[in-house]
Length: 265
Ligand code: CO8
Image 1 (cartoon, protein in one colour):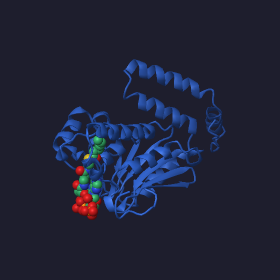
Image 2 (tube, rainbow, N blue to C red):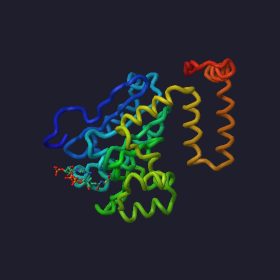
Image 3 (cartoon, rainbow, N blue to C red):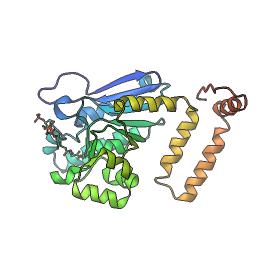
Image 4 (cartoon, rainbow, N blue to C red):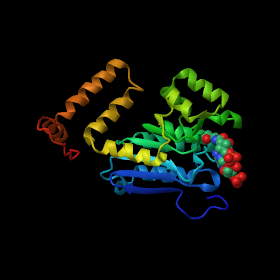
């Protein structure tokens, strides 16, 4: 906690039906990521009570101005080499846990998503941007490089040259351009971006839960696997679907011309 902060949770968690909403809330620091936020996000990723039966997670920032304005610069400024390595490790472990959740994770980006905030979106499967969303990796302006996975996940999301340009130049990317280069899925201007993210999560909640999990596994493997291994994995996971009640229900419902009622088994 920094001076001026209250004992309010730095990450608020809420269930709306089968959707978990995590709201990062440090209003005095534009929701910057300090150790408390990282710990709270990490705890949410293993909170069985919160995640039980959930179909998707939505992450957003409190207030109208920022998703997350980066790692906490005040907290980082005093780090020595070992402290910096430990802090980067802590962030990477938490973002790995988030990215590794078996259910889709959706970022609702409502303002600045800079540095660690942009890296947080990169750990999410889907990213929706409000019209005021701003993405970027401004670390070089502070004399450091991205440390929460940015150099690696940004390359995978937007390609090597675009990632290099964003990391080298510290240039801010507004919402429309973020969509154009693949940093965000779409700009949401008709409703609050959180509502759009929850609606997308609910759309995902309505389809076969096991199939969604297996899709996530296969799609994410494509980032790391060669094509041959990826196709083999896809084939095996496709076959695995045929051991599930969801496959039987999904296909029977189609053939019976009725809505499917999935159990997630
Ligand atoms: N850390 C700490 N405090 C912050 C941060 C941050 N990242 N961003 C904003 N704040 C604070 C400001 O200091 C200010 O506090 P106060 O009111 O007490 O002065 C308050 O939030 C409001 O901010 P501003 O007054 O600056 O608001 P503006 O609207 O003028 O500007 C900006 C908004 C453009 C977002 C501006 O705040 C800004 O540039 N913030 C920093 C953005 C940034 O550089 N982020 C990257 C940080 S580095 C990083 O994320 C590395 C990740 C990997 C770490 C690896 C560990 C070793």
